[in-house]
Each structure stands twice: as structure tokens, then as C-alpha cells.
Length: 96
Image (cartoon, rainbow, N blue to C red; front, side, top):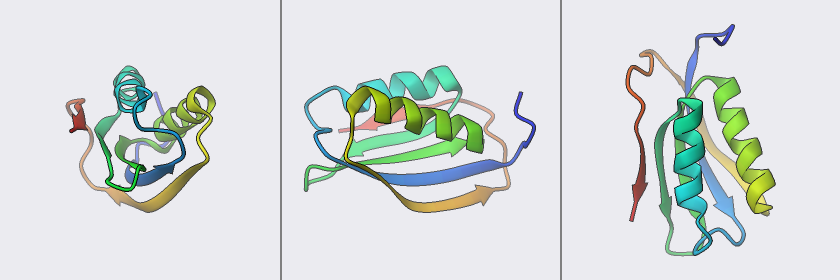
């Protein structure tokens, strides 16, 4: 259990060779195993956008695992906000 119960919603832009290599499917699998809600989708320019909602520790674990697995060039944090409500159900969607 996390010491800090604050739930964050982070949006990342991931740059590098991340389309056509199973990045979204692995992001979903890892996020679900960590109890993270959110979504991941390809962008027209070849980047991927990922929205993750969970504790700071959980999101950090997800990003670290994806960085290590896919050797991505850049995880750019587009926005971060704390959210009032807790994550009651886990859903991590892949947007086509």
C-alpha cells in the first residue's frame, strides 16, 4: 500500500520507435498489473500518448518499466494533476 494516497493523472508523450513494436499492448499489460487506470494511443506523427491515473509510485514504476523495455528516446510529461477521487476500478484502454 502506498504511504501517500494521492491519486495523480499524468499525460505523457512518448517519442522514439514506439509504434508497431507492441508498445501500447505492453503499456496496458504493465499498467493493469500495477493497478493503473488510463489509456494509450498512437499519434499521427509517430509518437504515442499515454494517460495514467494512479499513485505517484505506481506511475513512476510504469514509466521506468516502459523506458527499460523499449529504450524510448523521450517520455515527455505533458501534464500532471492530482485528482480528488480515488481509482475504484482499474481500466487501461488502447485507443486505435
